[in-house]
Length: 294
Image 1 (cartoon, rainbow, N blue to C red):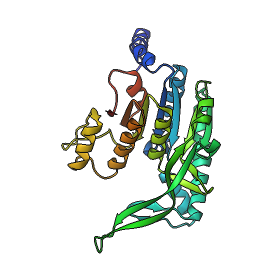
Image 2: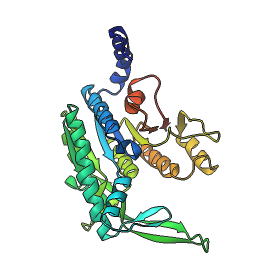
Image 3: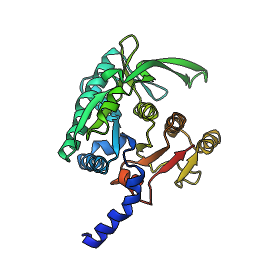
Image 4: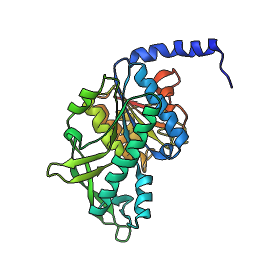
């Protein structure tokens, strides 16, 4: 379907107020899920990020890589152990996690952004002590006894401190930081950090205008599985309490609440598999996904 020159011009003019709203602002985009697995979708995402940078928005990309890590561990014959749905990361596993996240995935995204005309810089939480992590212990209910017990997840961490010095040197200079969620503890150990949590901590520390969490679902759904377009923190807490928000959506919403409390203006949970989801959310009246605000 070809779009006429007049229609193209109209679309650009309609995007203008949105461009002005985000002019020189920081937008943190967490990129993960199935959208990462398809090259054409990954290249489309890269073009969208370059377009944001060209419109004087400062994008920061944080990526995950759970399926790719699982694949590499399988290939190397390292068995993954799980507790309550969480991967236990031993010393051998964290080496592979770092190799996949900071190596192949990070450099692939950097390559796609650069091929689209951008200037991406691949980093991890280790660079410039950007993110210092503390060890995570999780309470898991034993299905046999129904007793809650603390499980040692090994080298799994959560952000303890964020130093934005490296990012502030990069942003506003036509460079696009692409961050892998690997961090160092105060005693120098390497920790794997959940990418949503990592993105929330980065967005909060940068006081970003927006944090976009790209997932595999349309956003937060109500009891009849319809998309909820907007939520306040109080609304979200009520929906968690009454069971409307459940399962894997709970930690995502907790990340949103944390980021908002740290000073991020708005957080959006949206489907990364929808073509140009980032542009639809930021540069159109339509928007995409669920917007959470204070």
